[in-house]
Image (cartoon, rainbow, N blue to C red):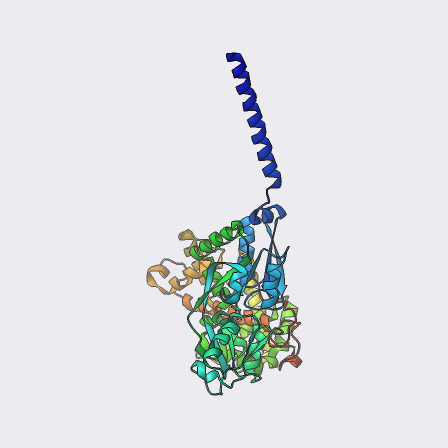
Length: 490
Ligand code: GLU
């Protein structure tokens, strides 16, 4: 009896175990992989974005842009490849995101809110921006929403700005506006710049990025408080990928990555100052065309990027061939008598000779740097050496080493340069006092000018006032930009 019971219990146990096994294996087979698992299994993260200077574009080294850089790092953190898709406009972007088999996420300077919130899930925010009303300098400045009545206003179709205007219109019915799905933000800014329209709305980060190209565009007033930009994921109950995104963005905020990207992409106005950025934009149109050929020729001869040489020239003299300083340096590239002689420059005030001599000198300085300094840092070190001299730069590199920093990384050495002007530090150096702080500014400015020059000289940019000289302003058409600055500048 007992034996019978035991065997029955045993059989029941086996039966149950078999059922559980079948159940589990059945479940496993039917289990749908999560969004995160799918990305990991495919080895690819598909991101949709907009092709614009504030989000994603291509330079001679390939893909770049704030959103691209951030998405690339996220893909790296997952150990997968990044695949970028671009949308023609915001409606298209949201449409693609919602489509079966569409991209995994959208990273495109998106402001959460409005009708779309129900169609997508937004990540934590990664950048605070303020919506700004902009107008053309010289016109009467609107200062409050009611001043927008009777103005020619165009905004991006499906944008948060269009939603803001729809709200305003309820209060001020005489406000009329057009939503454009054919243009990017740069097009709208250009239209304000040349007076084709009176007003547009732009996020403060995009304006900072583009201000230098559109000197007539001015902020009229902020339309509301700042808002956080976020990535968008398709609507779903599956939060696996969203949680990864949020953890990544939170970390990027803490470890300084977001700040570095912000400085890199939106820092033009901060670094140059408003007046500096504005003046540069003007000189780009009025002065550079006269000397561009010389820079190009020197660049070709020395196998250097002519735009970097032009950026040096601007930092030195604002492209003025008769520039003179109290210390006796002269000409467009501000050469000392000694350097001019060494470079074979007979007349320092001759723009062509000055550009040739200065360019040659820059390349010589670069060639003399130690092998251990690799590009892109090598370029920034060369600029520093051009300004302060190789000996002082060497001192700064030694100081970096003593501090446990990397003497071959510009980010590290630039922290040491200002110390060359402080007695407690320079008295311990071999070559003594030097105005290292100025050198940091010198390099920083040139990098900004260089960034701007590379963006405006994209070969695809057709038309514009500078077309004949081969120099073009952005936003004149919608072709895909290429050949812009290096991404290795963080
Ligand atoms: N942040 C805006 C939005 O999500 C788009 C960017 C712009 O219009 O400048 O609608």
